[in-house]
Every structure is written in C-alpha cells, then in structure tokens.
Image (tube, rainbow, N blue to C red):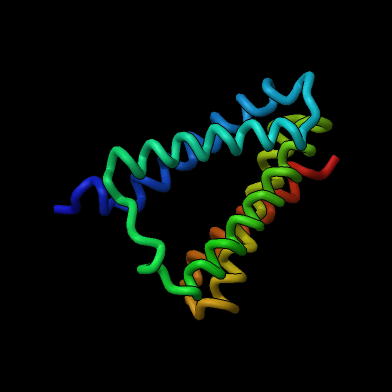
Length: 144
C-alpha cells in the first residue's frame, strides 16, 4: 500500500484545491492594491510558510550538498514562478477570476509539450486526447 507521502495523485489534488483557493483569495486581495505589490506580499507569506515547513520537517540540508545544476534550474524555476505570478495577479486585477484561471490552465497543455521536447516524456494516445480536451476547453472558455 502506498504511503500518504508518496501518493502523488493525492498531493496533486491538494495542489489543485489550494490553487483554486488561491485564485479566489487573490482576486479578493488584489481589488484595491497594485498587482505587483500584491505579488510581493504573497511571496513574503510563501517564504514564511515554506521556512516553517522546512523547520517543522527538519528537511534543511547544507547548501554545499546541492549541485550547481540544481541551483541553476531551481533559480530559473523561481524566476519563471515569479513572472507567472506577476502576470497572473495583473490578469486577476483586470479580468474575471474564472477566465484568468481557465487560461492559466493552458499550462497543462504546455507542460505536456515541454515534457515531451525537453524531458523525453512520452504520453499515450489517451493522455494526448485528454491534453487536447483541456486545450479545447481553454479555447472555448476564453472565446467570446
């Protein structure tokens, strides 16, 4: 039997629930504030929560044990995350939350393509069909 900590589907589902909460809470939070400054505040909270989790789980490790490759890709991932959040908060400021969140889910389609090209991950025909349906759903939802 799979332990809770190794059940990736459960963790992904929890991520989706929290992402949905994030969209609603962020839309409410960005109403009377500049979206860039709102992203900064959100980031400070994330740093605090992440730090608390590292302390609680005792998962810190010496920086010297982390390869320069890992630092590079984590740094680039952080840069992409920051840019994504800045764009997302700006979109939330000026657009409807359901529209913004649905277009943001186009990332699922892009991840599948990037995973194929950059990581050599293969998807089955059924999985490609699902990706196509997600992409079609985004297009339908975003069109007027």
